[in-house]
Image 1 (tube, rainbow, N blue to C red):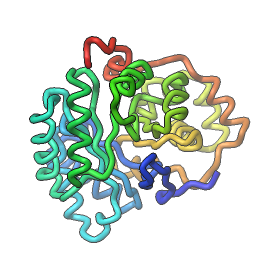
Image 2: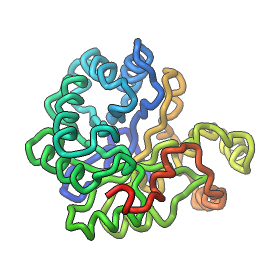
Image 3: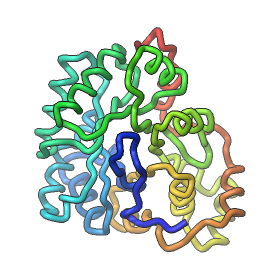
Image 4: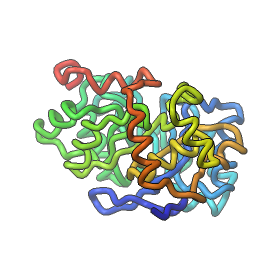
Length: 281
């Protein structure tokens, strides 16, 4: 499977989204995040993922300005924080995000978690913002199949994207299958499981045999499975190394990595996928 920075997946409403980009969670302000985003764009990255909760949207915006015309092709994703759920707060939040980023419209805006409650009202407001031209596409993050099913049953438009923790040690097969059946693009955060299992599983030997790092193997596996993949780093050299476009995993290597699944959760945020609909609707 040939992949590059420019490889895209098609969203339900017809727009193209890059399959690979930079995550910025825990890339703090004060220059760290700004420098990381500039390094990524300089290396060829064309998707940057941020969030109001990360408190670094202003730094991402500054980096985009630093990069000048090169930033025009960058696909920008941000997320609505749970304390901004509800129609009025949601509509105010998108304006705040656009101001901090210094852009007139987002490429993709996600509801960060169902945990903020008032999900139906909030989702309808996000669609309202999209239809007003403030974002091109809307989706969700940390939503499980039962929550997505309930959202659809409430008469709501189905999200175009669902971003959740997904890696070879937690393959979320039920959520992936539900999304694919319903035309929802899967976006993988924590594709390295925050490096918590490096050196502890059969991946270490597999990576050594391939002459690649475990991080490169994880990212390549995720993209070859068709997931939009956003490894986070604030180190320029790791940002360069985390773009694994110079090799392809064989069917046998993919199968070996498929066998690593152990439902390991690196993030507490993923637990929101299991919340009862009655608690979040």
